[in-house]
Image 1 (tube, one colour):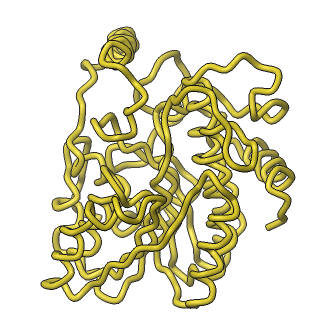
Image 2 (cartoon, rainbow, N blue to C red):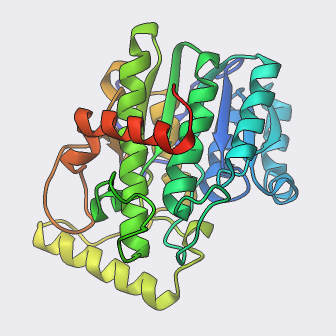
Length: 321
């Protein structure tokens, strides 16, 4: 690509001149924030977008602009029910998509939760690991055959993966004291490792997978945080940035936050991003160091770790893929 994008690039800028007419995309989490913006940006360029959401009434209201965008673009938008915290819902959603049998060119696993109080999903998994990782693990693997040659999977990870590696011995905090940020970090590392393992399994048939960090954005994802907790988090990020000689943390707008997702799905070279972790519309460098800052920790791209997580995930959900 001759065009170079960065941290402040928007979805409009990234997709300028890109024709997605006839492309079909599944986006999870289309009732607010990045999911709505991602769906709008793709639909506005002609894509046929299927949005998945737990609360369909809320999603209908939130995506009115997406439907409006399709009138001029020639694209389309529809919704399907999906509660990632319930494997029965995940499987029902996958069954509906498989019965429909239309192929997807892109799957953007956008939905997630961040730092809630301790809880469990309908199937007994810790809320963040169960929702952010295991729900997507089952959904994407069940519909993997619908991704045709040239297809892409984009998993939304986070710089929060730097909080923690996955814990394959105690993924549900049955023996470990619960910390919402450690749990979030584990789930975001899992999102990256899932992309690594999925890419290894499907790249020979022309399907690639990548993980992306959208950046810090004010969305409903932060609904479990008080204003004081948000300020403390930003202060800790700024301290890590200062120690590394980096500028202070800056929040992104929602169009800036969704830019890396659409870039990785529809613009970036597939070979460049396959099996990698991306941020600010580029492939991130592998970096150690404390705190939340740029780059990706080595464990989030480790192939052996990715394969071990895959096996553990199959064991937990009771399915082999």
